[in-house]
Image (cartoon, rainbow, N blue to C red; front, top):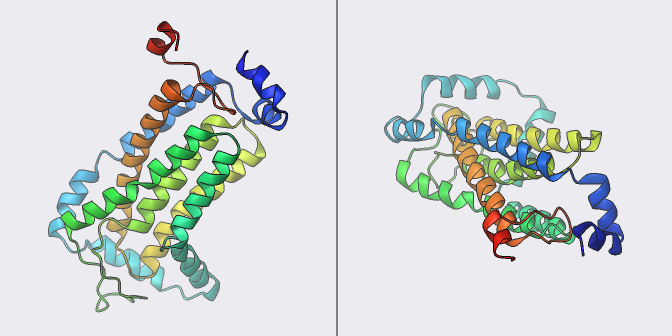
Length: 256
C-alpha cells in the first residue's frame, strides 16, 4: 500500500500531509541550502575560541555592552529579562521536551528525536567552557545583573537556542509548504534567537564575543544535526505517518 493511501485512511494525518508538507525534492533542496549556510557561518569558531582563551574581552565587547546598558527603557529591560529567563533551567528543558512531544504527536517521529539531538549541543558548549575558561564580564566594567559561576565563552543560552530553535527553523523551512503561517513561525524563531544574544549582553553576563562564539558553535552543531537527520530519515524512517522519505539506495536494492 502506498504511503499516501495509508495517510488517507488515517484521516487527519492525511489532510496534514497534503495541505502542509512540501514535496520530497523541495525538502532535499532546502535541506542542502540550510546546511551549507550553517557550515560557512561556523568556519571561524575555532579561531575565536583560541583567542578568547587568552583575552578576557575585546574593546568592541565593552563598547557594545555599555551602549546596550545605556538604554534604560522599562519595557526593553523586562523583555531582556524574560528572554534570558527562558534559557535557564528547568524552563529551557521543559520547552524542548514539550516541543519535541508535540512534533511526535503530529506523526513526525524522526523529527522529534532529532530535536533532542540538536538540543544536546549544549553538552558541547559546556565542554568548550571548561577548555576556554574565559571569565564573564566584571562588575567593575559593566553592570552585572546577577553573578553566575561558570565561565563565559561561549554563551550557553545562545548556544542552546541556536541549536534547538535553529533546527525547528530547518524543519519548518524544509517540511512546510510556503505560507504566511510558515513565514511568521520562522520570523518568530529567528527573532527569539537574536534577542537571546542581545539579552545576555544587556544583562552583563556575557560579552559580545561570547555570544558570537555561541552562534558559531551552535551553527556547527546545527549542521551536524541536519546531517544526522538526513542520514537517519532515509535509513530508518521511510514509512512514518507524516513526511515519509524514500529509502536510501542501498536499502532499496536489498528490498528493505
